Image 1 (spheres, helix red, strand yellow):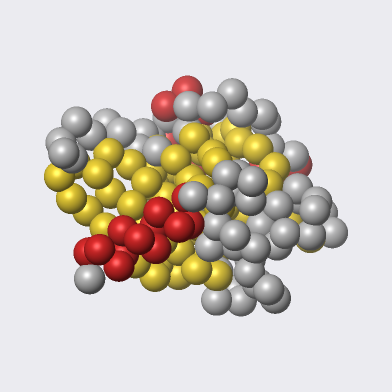
Image 2 (tube, one colour):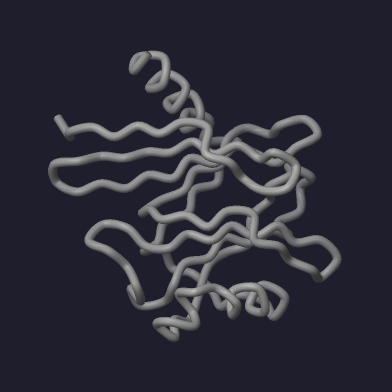
Length: 152
């Protein structure tokens, strides 16, 4: 089972021409107003007064980067090797939070006909690596698989 899961995760990450990566330590930009309105309602914003930054992405593979992936600025509310990762679906100046995750990096999978791309979120420390595969169900992303293991 582990071999199958690892194979699927490698396939998800092996399409550099189709994948767009997001890393919590990348050079990111301030979210547009429609995204900020959604992020203001999150617990991390209210509890820690975190600001957000991120970048536009194309979740539905229509050739337009109208969706947004965000994380908190300046390490606000981050753990040792992971920070909040928020994925927002935006249409006609209205945005909806479709994934509230935690990790270090995010990889978008190949285009999915009639749906949004799959998402893999990973994080790790010197001894431990974790990766989660998320699939869109028409309303939000649901965790499909999770792998955690020791680094070799």
